[in-house]
Length: 120
Image (tube, rainbow, N blue to C red; front, side, top):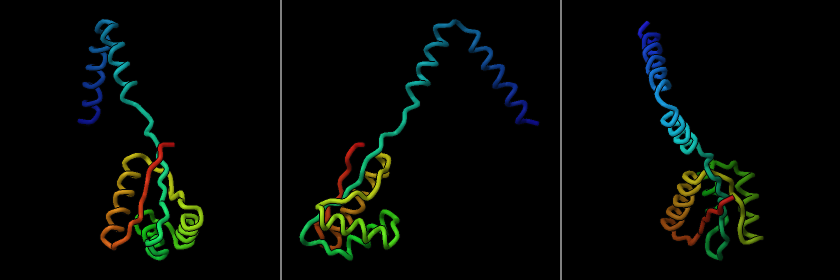
């Protein structure tokens, strides 16, 4: 019952604010439109080097990017033969976090593996 009372009070507040002059109403609409924004997507790529082992790259793809073994193997071979390979496309926060984790794990294990992000 209190939920319906809350809705009634909220509706009354909305009615009060919407009855105010049009200038304020337009400004609030513009503010709402500015807040809603689609997140940008970033391509995450691994770069080949002569030191990082293929097994380590596969383990990174499985652990950090949640790829299955077959997907990880295909991406690793692409990186090895073409110099870089697309791991996936993610929002900025996820891409940045995963790239940072890759480089941290690589450094801890003595590998120079690099992970980069490119805006789509």
